[in-house]
Image (cartoon, helix red, strand yellow):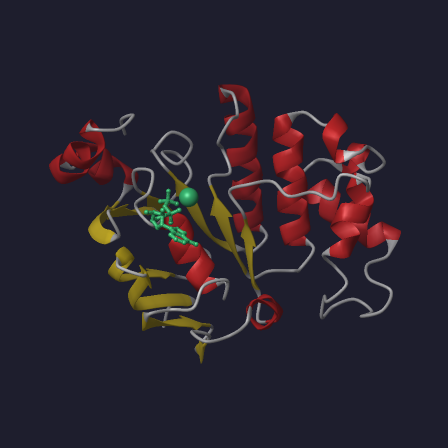
Length: 242
Ligand code: ADP
Ligand code: MG
């Protein structure tokens, strides 16, 4: 049994089929890459897993339990979290407060008090922003804003983290640093699914890549196999390249 099992997932918006009978799994301790050209349905898959979108057809299981119809807070309480494609900090609150907000419903901390300052420091330290805790989100460089989003996700103590385009807008040095941090999470026991529109940050990071194209499963394999796959190359020809 895989930790996360998405089986025959279909999501329609009116007449638009955004995800069509798509299946994939993530095993415990794995880092799975999920790639596809823009608009291929990657974020929709994450929104369905996280209970943000109702599933049209198919099922989603996590840790053996059926979470297909769960609300977001139930999914989070079961140990799943997601770093969205868009950063969404509360601008009027420093980094520490932004992280603390995410610990309020945390099963491991006091429900009313949220995390202690020490716990918030630890979450920030896991993604190397512990020296930015008193700064306001708008004062941070882009890469640190993204790290704050990851710290918020860590603060819900996930077993499996979904990362939606974590490398977008980063330069090569920032991509390498973040990939190292993600690898560290794996060594701490976390399972991850990392979405990107191309292979860039994933090549040396993930165990396996699943490719979506127009909502359909296109291919699955090691990063090397996917880089050489003709169908994948064709799907990317119209866009910005693999
Ligand atoms: P990706 O993340 O791969 O770029 P998305 O999952 O964001 O792709 O989008 C897949 C398709 O679903 C697109 O055609 C997009 O316009 C559509 N879509 C996504 N979310 C919604 C929504 N809330 N309402 C209507 N259409 C949506
Ligand atoms: Mg997306």
